[in-house]
Amino acid sequence: MTAASSQNTDESLTDLTAEVFDIDPEALKSWIEQAVDWTTTNVLTLDTAIEVAIIITAITAGFIISKISSAKLAQIINRLHAPNIVKRALQKIRKSLAPVSIFILLSLCLAIAPLMVPDIRLGLVDAVTRLTAAWIVIRLVVQIVHNPTMRNVIAFITWSIAALSIFGFLDNTVEMLHATSLTIGDFQLTALTVVKCLLATMIMVYIASSMSRTVERRLINIPGMTSGSRLLIGKIVRIVLTILAVMIGLTMAGVNLSALAVFSGAVGIGVGLGLQRGVSNLFTGMMLLMDRTIQPGDVIELSTGGIGTVKQMGSRCTEVITLDRRSYLIPNEQLVTQPVINWSRGGRENLVSVVFGVDYSHNPHQIIKLATATTDGNPRVLQFPEPSCLFTGFGDNSLDFQLNFWIADPENGTAGVKSEILLALWDVFDQHNIKIPYPHREIFIHNKS
Image (cartoon, rainbow, N blue to C red; front, side, top):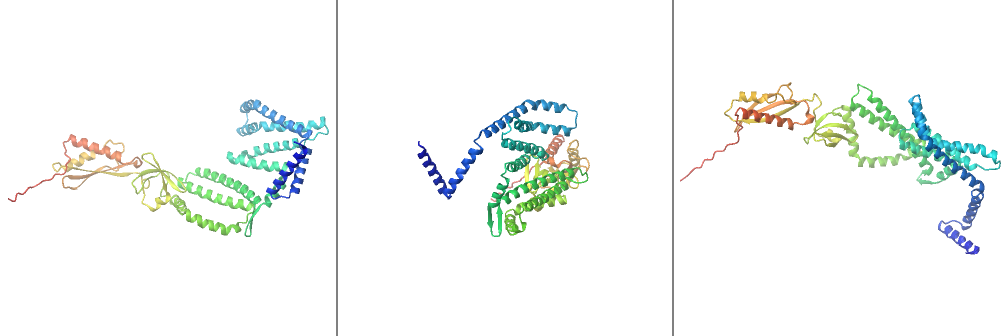
């Protein structure tokens, strides 16, 4: 291909690009020429190649030093007779051994190279050295953040801002973000405002979350406070701090909250209509925790007949573990609007009744003594209050009785203990030849002839 044809091809590509992006072809050609000249003058030079070689050598050597020395340094730190906080700090520094080694090697190069070659340019090496130093400092400072994901996000964002500042692109980036805007009526939303809003809100929400966890840990150490009160106060503190964090974050980002009043009101109405059940469950859950009618650990019986132990009470629902070890999530609203028996309030004793009947040929006094004796020795039956057997009436086919006794573990159900008592009654009746009646019917046939 000749030089003329190559030049024509470049010009046609330039014209096509300018036409697609609606740019003046002459301005585009001028910009491309300036970019090529700058690249040829500042990038494709011997000094740049030397700087790139120095940086690659320092990075390679730094990782090799870290790989060889990391395990030995860990053993040395563990053997030190120092407080644990000092050891933890040294261990964190050890994990940053690679960037520290790279920083030291590049700093030595910046100090020694000008003495050996006076006219050498090391601008790129100096920039990478400062980037490495910024990374080391940032990684050490963000160790105070306990959440690993938040720690990495903060470190990356901070280091990116430092990199833009070191290379001189920070002001241009800020201007570009500020110039990119969206206008809605009198409200103007810029890309810079969005970025600042996200950063400020994220940091403030994390601070609020950390403060709420600290409050919850402190509440655990208060002996006179019930578990329900701790849970209620913890949730209120978390919700209030999160709302304040979002408002402070928006204010720090320069967002005028009054401009969002109408919009937030409309959104609030829509969300309220769509999440009215969720809001109802939230407030009923707070009511339950406040009046302490139901608390974690209570044994409750629902209107459907199921019995279980309250494991935990959340903002939306309450978790109940039933006798078959299944976990049921019951909306808090149902615990307020429907009848619920709480076996844990006023004592855990539960009255259990067994109804039976015997033949009319037997003495009811004897039956009462024998039936009452069947509860002796049963580990689940309480001896105080004492079990009792009542003669309830003369039935169509039997003498009717009701055996009453108390248990102290209603969470284990009543079907099992009823079965044990019924089997004991069967054994006693069989031993004393006591008959259990069944219905009799007499049929009379009248012959009219």
